[in-house]
Image (cartoon, rainbow, N blue to C red; front, side, top):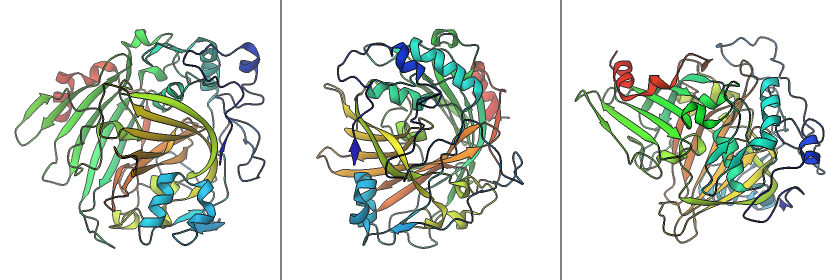
Length: 448
């Protein structure tokens, strides 16, 4: 059931900065980045265990993940027959999926608030609490790097900015898998595996940044090369997402040895080779410009979301261990009860988007969108997404290890940017810089 928002949430369109009493709660009643420290009254959500993450015995950076909760058994399993009993812990999209997709279920485990907060992130976030601001178009105008901009959010847009600037370190390289099973796929038939090399750059992760203008108002940058299947191997995309203007993108087609600018490769433009199941701005649950939506903060609630999904971070697995025709194998996904912020996005007057309404459910401990429901023009549930959070001990917090989008109406799904079965682990570094994502640099990189 949706609960009342925290007392400091305002209900007006213009928001004052948090006062000193609110800011003093960070690190006491609230975690250093703004989550409630206390557990829930129901006992389903435990108290926050601390900002420092402790790697389990046997863990080594880059090796097969060690799951400290692997011996736990599900508390209960939700399927079509029991969904009504747990409806208040499901989003409308989750509920529709469980009820409509034969064989789909959700195994629910004990909750663990396992995502840490690096000390420097806590320090920078506290600075932002009294500093960060948005303009009237929901563009970030002030913030220091290395922290979350809005630990005490007063609007839906502020929460989405926390997701967009969630801490991943300055740069990350991942080998990731997409799977787009053909319509009607069942069992072991899930189509061909798409393998990608992604390199991402996050200039606002640097603690030396005192204003977004210092990094050219760049929010993030991506360069990606397709490694499989052979028919499109060598193709790629480079994009730069800006704080104050639309995304810039370039596409490279290896068969033609040709690169072209793609100014429309954003918002609801379909991602190449995804059969229209994945659009540009659902990558990483949400990315890119926010100017087509109004974002309304609904409040907080408890929700069953994927959490501690070590299996989907295991690069050593095979695709047949992870995927099947109808959905991600149910044994791969662990669900836990956590508190989330609920934000409703509706298309602005005079704007257009193929998804006129979206509802985001944002994990309070990481500011990561963990579940998203997408609605069609008639207001019916169209699609639902889930993102896979996993502790990354070398980073000191949790990382989004991929996502899945389920088309409830069509009975199809697409797995996107999933680390499992990719063959190589994620690598976090400080290797990349803005100039690596220019058109010329991208051409040299992908043609090497």
